[in-house]
Figure 1 (cartoon, helix red, strand yellow):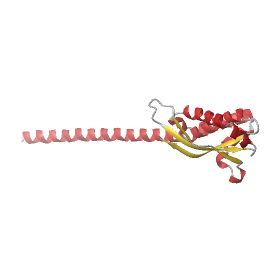
Figure 2 (cartoon, rainbow, N blue to C red; figure 1 turned 90 degrees about the horizontal axis):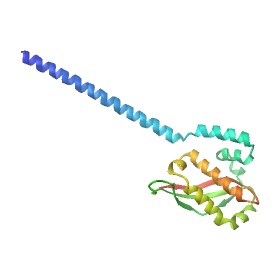
Figure 3 (spheres, one colour; figure 1 turned 30 degrees about the horizontal axis):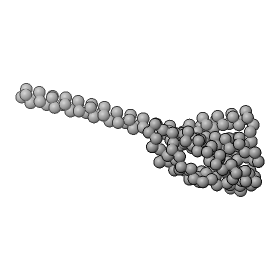
Figure 4 (cartoon, rainbow, N blue to C red; figure 1 turned 180 degrees about the vertical axis):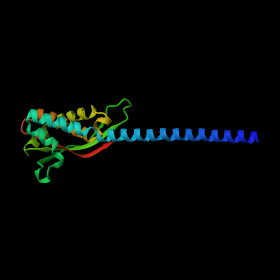
Amino acid sequence: MADEENKEEETQQDNKKSNKLMIIIIAVLILIILGGAVTTILLMSGGDEVYVQQNTSQAQSQKTPTRSKYNNMETRKLSDIGVLYPLDTFTVNLKSDAGRRYLKATISLELDDEELSIELDNKSPVIRDRIIRILTSKTLEEISSKKGKKKVSEQIIDTLNAMIVDGRVQGIYFTEFVIQ
């Protein structure tokens, strides 16, 4: 009889240990899932709120009319868009340690005047070179978010406007954007 009671107590203790172990495993899994969800949310958001605040302060301090257009490109009406100048497709390697990522992008430039297209035709190789240099300097993480695409667009616009004489590039439109 004492043997049966000892076996029963051991069985109950084993059950308690396995229950505690099961609870610990479930708690660890929940923490891992929550950590993954938080990380995913942070990576997907891309810090857009900070970006908007920075651009607002920059736009107010610089009072540059084209800078405010960058921020409002997504909300503009189709009738407000200027002349579009399509560029050939860019296929570039992205900056990475492994060197296995590339970007295929087709870009159209929004011009403030149709006559600017003549100057862009004459400077086409230089324009392609500048855009390729900008794109190849970016990592996958930098260009995969909405914030990153805006930043690349602004950088391309600023670079091109610095070399153009007869007008201004008002916007950049990605008509194809494939990362592999």
